[in-house]
Length: 478
Image 1 (cartoon, rainbow, N blue to C red):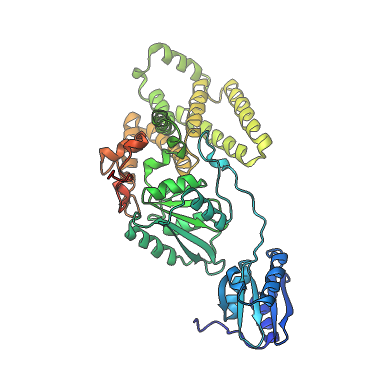
Image 2 (image 1 turned 120 degrees about the vertical axis):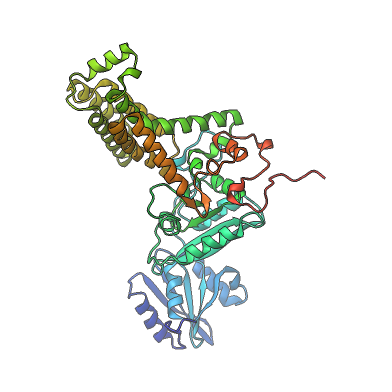
């Protein structure tokens, strides 16, 4: 027992005073003295607005009738210190402080209004399960178990943040998840010194292998089916109280272009959709750079007719191609952000109308050329095809870097930028897993299920990349 904690006493008034002091004399702390029987009384403590008072009354009635029936509803058997009682109250529990006993009983009567299970707005799909996580950790864990009813699914609970004491659940599959990676995850979580954990990204930034990179080394999702697919590959999921976003690790770069819907369609359709996203990602990152490099340095590679058209369109524009490109990309990002932050009813209309009006006005004013408007629009559309993960933002940032390299050295600058990017990605690790795997180190058999999708009957082996203990997915016929 912690020496700094204060033990509950056998005096009811003293316990109330100590608990009120520990709770900063908050006005929403309710403490009611009640008698259980002729020889014993109890102080019922709870926070107004977080407690189902009707359930609490029923449990008290039940306890008065038979003290052996209440433990079925308990979260913890007993508390013996003021600090433990205060932590239970702050979590939404009710605490019964028994007079002349020096102990208390914590019971689960939490009643906080949360939103219902619905389809995640950020990961909408055409085909597949529609349920998404909510802000309730218990509901999220129940959703995972509902879709993955296996006795091998293991949930390990812990609390993070010495002020918020946020509940965190680590999910793995017994006999499948690599125990070394699982131990490393627990070690990093236990070493988090933060005072508060308000969102899963707080955990992500503390436990990631490289805190100085903008590339996501841990996956984030609102979809239970995506979490279950990761668990079946031998990976690990982390659920955090108060956020609908679950963390999945380890995570490699090429997985950023995959969505769970790929496995809901025929594998030919799923493979084509995945290839389109990969192609769109490359176009979104490199198209402005290629335009700037071609217009600035490599006129000989453009057909004469097209070159004359580009030259005539750029003649009234007073800015070089790189400045023109940066202006359009920045304007597009501003409109995209404005469309997201505005109310849904007007956000899309404002972003679309704003883009049309701004683009047309910029062309008529001679600020940008029509071809640059086309390049910026095509670049933006390509980024819209990518899953709404952190890699989407990364590619949009890389546009600027690649365009700058192209303005300095043309196609050579683009190649230098690509080589530098690949070298940097090859140096990253996600819990010891190479970030460019299975591309580097190269594994052809596993790469075929990353670039395209294998059919379910041909997907017997789990990726060796994640060091799963049990490689085979299917049982051998006996």
